[in-house]
Structures are given as C-alpha cells and as structure tokens.
Length: 277
View 1 (cartoon, rainbow, N blue to C red):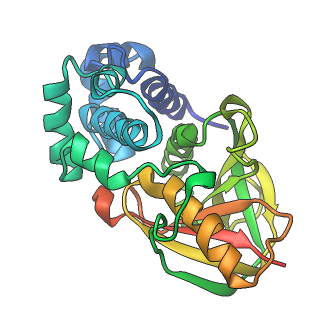
View 2 (cartoon, helix red, strand yellow; view 1 turned 135 degrees about the vertical axis):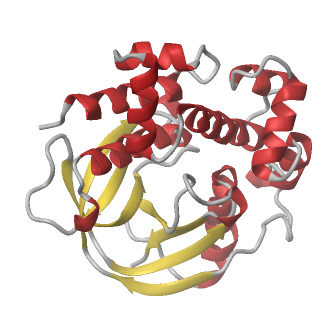
C-alpha cells in the first residue's frame, strides 16, 4: 500500500499542476504535505531528485510553453497564468530554461492555419519509420481532460515508482491518447499515463492496460513537448496521406525516450506511434 510519504509527494505535485498561478512557496507546499518546512524540503528532494523550487519552475515553464504554442493567450496572460508577477520576469525565466525568449519560442512553434488553408510546405518534416512493435503490458493511471495536463499524472507515476523502488521492474514510460482532440471537447479527452511493466502483479493504485503491438508508423520528435501537437499535424496531414498506409482502429501512443527532469527541453526525445493495418 502507498506510504504516507508517497501520498504527500503526490498531493504536492498535484497541487503544483493544479495551481500554477497560485502561491507555491515552500511554506505553502509544506502545508499541503502536512510536514514542517525544513523536513519537507529534505524529503521532497530526496524522493524526487529536485528541490521544490526546481519542480515549481519546471512545471510552470513547461505549462507556459504549451500555452505559447497551442493557445492564443497574450504574453501577459501566459505570464500571469504561470504565476509570474510580470511579463519581464516570466521572459527571463523562460529564456534561461528554454534558451529562447517567449516571443521567439512562439514564433518558432509556428501555429499552423486551419486544415482547409494548408499549403505545401506548411508541415515541418520529422523522421518516420515503420516497424513491428511488440505487445506490451502496462501499469497505468487514467486521465480525463486536456492532453497537455497528463504531465500531472506522469509526475504521480514517477513518485510512486521512486517511493516503492519499482524502477527495476519498469521498461519505460508510455502515454496513450484515445480521442481525437479536433473532435472531442478538451475537457472530455481520455488518455492513460503508463509504465511498461516487467514485473508480476500490477502495483496497487495502478490499472493493467494491454497495448497491442504490430505494424506501426513511428515518428521521432526532438524538442519541447509544446511542439508535439505540430508533429501530430505533420504525421496525419503530410506523412499518412502520402504513405499509402492505412491507420488501424487503435489509439496513438507516445514513447518517452528521456525525461524533462534531467534533459534540456530542446533535447527531449519522443516517439509518436501510429498503429497501422
């Protein structure tokens, strides 16, 4: 069964994800954890590998990068919604973390026009290979809501794996995205954050998910998670129509090849997997 320290880590990580614009001071997070300020800081760092301040900064700026590229929020709105007192302080923190000022990052993300307005050259090119994927047994947590918020669930999985020392039984992380975000309302999107489970019994609190393998188109995307939406548009709007392949009636999934906890945003590697007939 989950121990009290695991519960505290999960509460705090969930609180950060749910309140990016709120008071995320060490005192507040210690209160959420129901521990003294001094001891909570030491426990959090020992169990996650980050200080509370580092986790808050990472989660806020990753959320801001998504909003910059995938929403029409103004720069002031993004800064406020990420919990920064003004645009200048947000811009400084963002540039230090992502290596680009927010305006340049948004421009580089290049929000694409509606599908009816697409012209040749609108799509960025990403490498795609076809390979035979194995069947996989996953241990998952279900998420309902915007896909960009699934990071909260993955944070929970990492905390569980660390507190229970499950890492020797894990073969990687997978996100499964069951609905089309162009059709299903954002708040109703279904997804699963999962670990490839190599052990016997599925850990308490997680659900078994059997991911079918087979012929699969695999697009390799390198860069911040904010750019994944554009990569999907390239996969479905450019590669698939020109490939001669037919998609299977199965959801797409993503294999994370490294982690934002210890990898710079521009070096993050994600494989977008599209099952084929």
